[in-house]
Length: 331
Ligand SMILES: *[C@@H]1O[C@H](CO)[C@@H](O)[C@H](O)[C@H]1NC(C)=O
Image 1: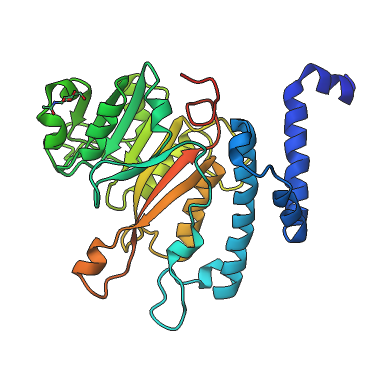
Image 2 (image 1 turned 120 degrees about the horizontal axis):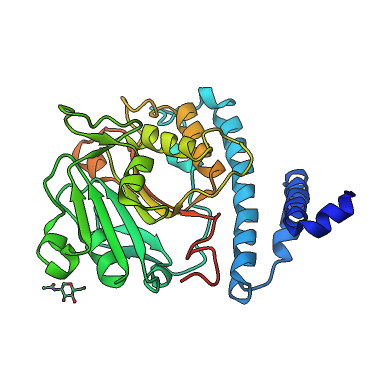
């Protein structure tokens, strides 16, 4: 079959090749050409289709990836020479390299209590229209204002919550019968491998295993606050879906719509240093996740003066796949 015939029979190739050419141009462009391209975009993002808006956001995001490398050269000049939290002289922290530069193309709002516990969510008004939706919440710690508000806003949603350090969801859910009926709690831990045989305390499950047990093939909202275990757990999650390697070609889409995560870049996690942290972050990006909001969590910095500001809350959306945030017609 000729190349032309192949294109005619598989329109997907045309899209793929167009994207490839576009990405190459972008790569070659960087400086002035990038400026010309983004300045030529429509004056208002509201005049664009969802697909166009997402493509344009991706264009902006690719520029940020170049800028990140420039910042590494400035403070490194290589990643292993960048300090996550320089003790003196240098004016940056880890978080400066990982900015939420991708705009969610829907409403963005803070859900749950103000302060520690609330999270920034993209397109809840769209998720609320779904007949069914699945929320996973790891790390409950007696406070469920986020989960309760999600359930209240989105009547089609149910939440599966996991935390081995408590016995139930917080009072925001437990005290309301109608919310409790859509909430499922287990005192288990999320981890990089399964370990839930007799005597394992706490029982540890991987995310794919939990989805399998619950019969889910997609998670609309994934909340992760598990005190440093997020690095290994999410690594394994990506690996399971064939996305374990940075810069691997776009595989199947990750089966989540968005993720609200508290990141603990602390000693003991193996990710308190810049280079391994950057590798982990780039794996999330390679899997199609794009950060649209970030908040440093300064609670400990205030309580323990001199401690590293190594806690941050990030919200990611999945820019790939077919779900409420990226598909025009999804209900
Ligand atoms: C419980 O949740 C339901 C559903 O969102 C809500 O209509 C009701 O007012 C809540 N009840 C209480 C006592 O908060």
